Length: 337
Image 1 (cartoon, rainbow, N blue to C red):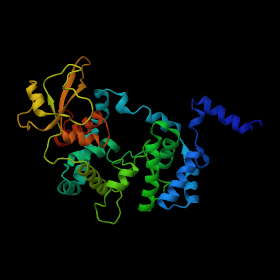
Image 2 (image 1 turned 60 degrees about the horizontal axis):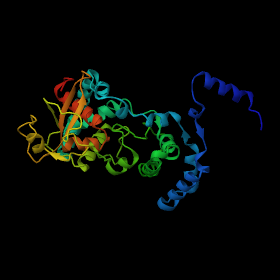
Image 3 (image 1 turned 180 degrees about the vertical axis):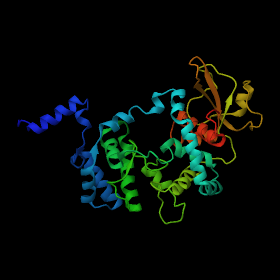
Image 4 (image 1 turned 90 degrees about the vertical axis):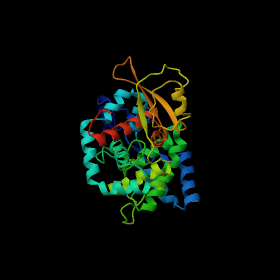
C-alpha cells in the first residue's frame, strides 16, 4: 500500500481537529461508476433521450454531502414539540415582513385568489415558512442534495432517484444549468421550495413572460403555490382550523391517526365538545392535541379539509399549524391566535 502524501495527511489532521468527519468532504466522481449510477444513466438515455456522456458528466460532478444525510435524519417536524416549533415561525419580524410581502405583491396575490381560490395570507404564509419570503432559499447545490439522497440514503433512495430524474428533466425544459441551482438539503427550490416533480407539475408562468420561474420571480412563485393548493383540492371559503376550549385524554377515539380527517363535525358535537355552531355537521374534521405553553397542559384544535391540504405541502401537522397561525397573524398583525 502506498503511503499518503504529507499534504493529504495534514488535510486529514486538520479535518479531525476541526471536528469534521472525513465523509463530509466533497467526494466527486464516484456515482457514475456505481451500479446504481450506471442504471440511472441508462434510464435517462433510454426513457428521456439524454446523451449518456452528459448524464455521466453531471453525476461525476455530484458530490456526496454528509450534512445532508444528517439533516434528513432529524427534521424539525419530528424532533421538536409544538411550542418549540411554533417559536421558529410565529415571530414579530416574520409577521411584519410577511405583511410587507403582501403589500408589495397585492395584485398578484389577489389574482391568485381569483384564479385558484386560495387566500393571500395562506400563499404568503407558505412562502414565509419555507424561505422567509425569499430570504433563505437553501445553501446546497440541488444536484449534490439529490445525488446524495438518491444513492447514499437507502430509506428513500427510490424517491430521490426519481426526483433526480425530474430535476434533469426540469432543468432541460426550463433552460437552467443543473450545476448551478441551490436549494434545501432535500433538493427543494425557490420561494416556495418546490421539489423537482412539483416544479414540473405545478409551477406556472403567472406574469406572462414565457417562463415559469419560482427561483427568482415572486409573482410566478405566488401563482405556483396557489396552483399547488388548488390542485390538491383547497376548498375556497371553508375553514382551516378552530381552537376548542376543551381537552381530550390521550388515546381518545376522537384523536384519530393519520393526517386526513376521518370523522365529521357531528362526531365531535355528539361528544359534547364546543364546536363552532356555524360548521356543517357533515364537514370532515380531525381533532389535534398539541403541547401548550404549560408542559402539563394541551391545546385542542379541530382541523378540516383545508388543513389537510396544507399537509400535502409538508406531511406534518406541526407544519400545517405553523402555516395556519402565521396566516392568521398576517391578517391581524398579532402573533397570538
